[in-house]
Image (cartoon, rainbow, N blue to C red; front, top):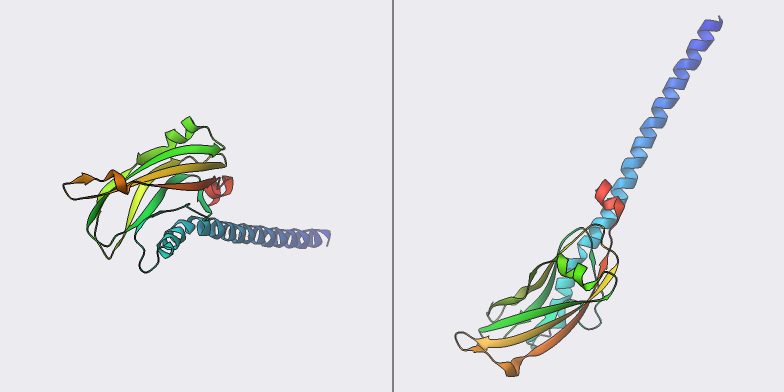
Length: 190
């Protein structure tokens, strides 16, 4: 009779352990999905920033506008390639030359940030009726990058095909970009 009671207790214990492990696994999956969706939303912000730059142009305004310029707060996550772009809108076919100077306001040293730069500056033709997206700086930010604020000064010059660039059209755009560590959770969970 004692053996039957011991057997029932063992089966009950095994059932409870199986249910507990199942609930633990479901809980981990649930937490992972919530955290990853929050992290991925922050990465989708860069496309929203581009759309916001487009709205800075009025219906009849032309020229160059860069992300992080003016009162825009722009944050880029660490751990991957990130573009810093300017939008160009023109009323006639023109050639533009954009040069970027990247400096650090706080956080990582300037030499460290220079190591993140994969590509810099942009030259190209712009046609009327389009909003040309010019990547002025392409960064490859490491996963363990510290919180850093970048000051990027973009100089733009306008020219016409074959005639070179006109020094009278030179404009300066100052952008502030925050590099925000995405953290350990994204690299291990997502």
